[in-house]
Image 1 (cartoon, rainbow, N blue to C red):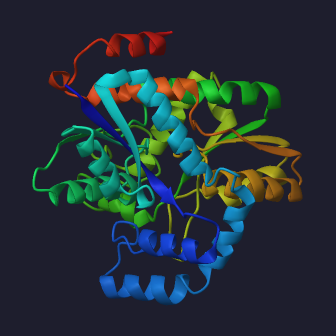
Image 2 (image 1 turned 60 degrees about the horizontal axis):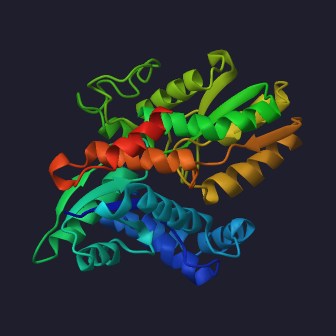
Length: 360
């Protein structure tokens, strides 16, 4: 029996051409899970206030990180899919899809079907749950699968913010960078979301727990189990312990905010400048919400934040690479996928090999 593994990441433009960037941003920002406003308000914001101006600016930023092989997110995604395929062997067919842009989810499902697969583990490559990323990806997969006459059996990998394999892989990538830099401060910068997204995720009801107190994210509990901000702090605590860092040396911040509505804080760009002005000289930045390097890591942190840090008096800001297709992450993806794959779908024989490598 053969099962499928569908790896889903957020997406990327096809090129740095402004028209391609505009097409990508249009698809992304018109998603009601991303900008959760009334349809008319979302249309006016995206079509009239964002798309006439932002694509050219974003295209310029993409050009700063684009490689000869294309978008880093796509290049690393393809490499990861190929390596996970090799790790799992011929009992599984692995495909990569993007929620926005290419390769599209419907094409990946078609390819799995053509390979004789009608049992699919869907793996959203977002460690912390958010409706804007994980929720949107799963909704799109279910929608595309539901359009088929013979719908495939689907199970999804849940958020893996503190999964031991994810934490171990993240630590393996970060450890040599931290050893070389010897930072006096470590920042874990996560993608931001509007505060209203967090409040809507409160299992006790909006405003009952999430953002109701300064300590709301100090531990995971029933109320905040689907809270993106709480899961980010949980990841940071687990990584701090795995890297044997002094918690007083580490801080959490959130980047990439858009618009004037309040977003979860503290803000990365603000803290980078404050740290430099406060005497920090060597700052290491991890981005544990991103499993592959992309515009938000390479350009926003690796270029702009690094320049801002030095301009404010710091000596050096170093971006710790994302997991990309690191061997430890390849084994972690295989192990996490196998955790969610029903045993009845597998022929057996592959799981112990992957699990032994993770244990090492």
